[in-house]
Length: 150
Image (cartoon, rainbow, N blue to C red):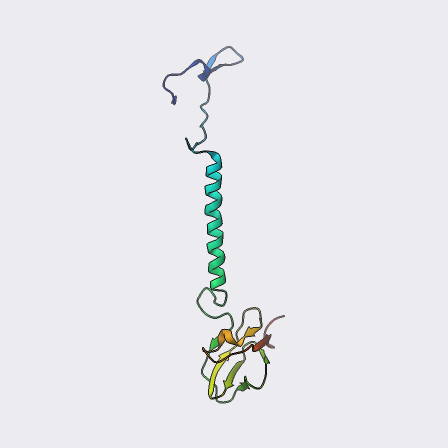
């Protein structure tokens, strides 16, 4: 009950009626003995800073992907028989509606993409095209479709 062995005079107090009662024991705070507080604060700050930096690096690396690994811009799909075809070498940008499927052509190459974008952002074609397809800047402006709420 007494952390330092037998009770001392300071472990007791006198009540107003003159009775001698044992004082309540108060838990002492945990101290890191021998470690200066400045070092504890510095170490804690360093660890928190590293955690924030690691989280920011992970977010920056995966900014074009959702948590399930899918692209925030939509997905590659098979070309439909009848669908919209855009010649990338003829224009610098194109407007599409969210949910629309578009086949992009350049020379003898082509790929098809369904635009299911998060927050209807502008898509740089280089972010979704196969390697070597888009050399320059080509923007796809995605707007809401009629079925989406405003």
